[in-house]
Image 1: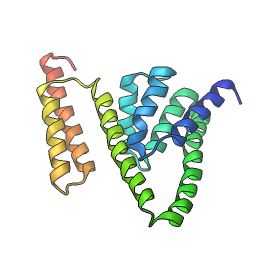
Image 2: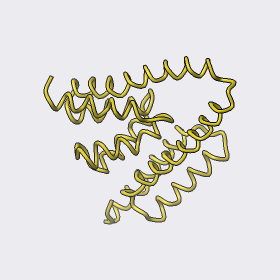
Image 3: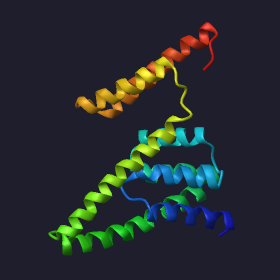
Length: 184
């Protein structure tokens, strides 16, 4: 195993070990490690990888690790990054489930989980703000953003359909801009 491979595995093992709250809570850590510290990918690639990871079957965290790993080290890199992000979480979940079953009626444990839930919301908001930075702030994108937010928050329409419609509208809108001589 090369140093780059070991670094890839350890980086994702740390992300997997210290991320609570699911894939969206992982995005700020992933951004900090692979974009800011390691500079393996840039912000736009991170945004693309996150979008693709949401659109493909499977958990967001695993998909992101697989895509970043592949970008850094090909197939072997994707395997190492995926294993790195999964292995710590697997053992942590086993430990938490054993402890939770032992103390599930304890008021202190319930209060700890309530506090963790609040913290996870902050992590998700931070991820949304960081992912939104490279997006062009024009009327079209803002209408899509807030329209999508309202539709997903106040209707039972599946978010996949909202993403598909946004993608089609983006192709149509930006396609017309390109034809008219505008920039992307």
